[in-house]
Length: 161
Image 1 (cartoon, rainbow, N blue to C red):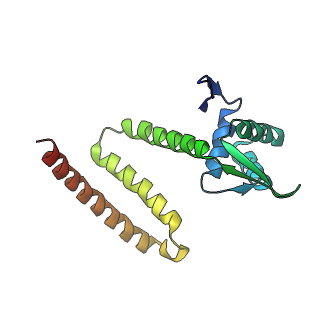
Image 2 (image 1 turned 180 degrees about the vertical axis):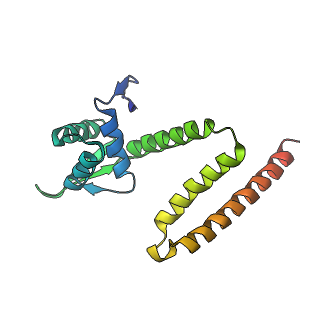
Image 3 (image 1 turned 120 degrees about the vertical axis):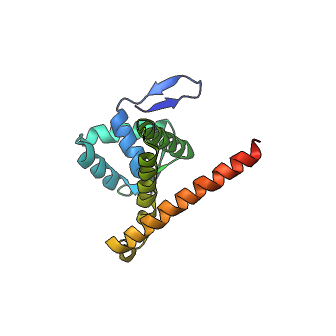
């Protein structure tokens, strides 16, 4: 559920929270043309075009998304800084909730490594994503995470003794 603080600190809820989060999520990695983002949201969550445009207009009015009209047919939407903060907050809250339900620490570490892998792979060229290279990267990432954990324990021990 998307909650936005209005200027007078009243909590305002989007009329279509699922559509709002889908729009904000879609714009997280960069601006998109209106036709592209509307089609993407319609396909992903099976809502009508007017519903998507209505929510877009609502998010623009709340300054979570900015609208740039290059021409009548070329309208670009982009996240504002506030929209980006909202997306990051929702993203991290979802990860925290998911990890809190995992009691086994080694399983939590596996999940964190998988999240890290998804992020890394999205930034690598396609030729670097094949099975063998991906597994080498996963093994390296797991080792780095374990080393970082040990370093942080040493640092915390030194700081709080």
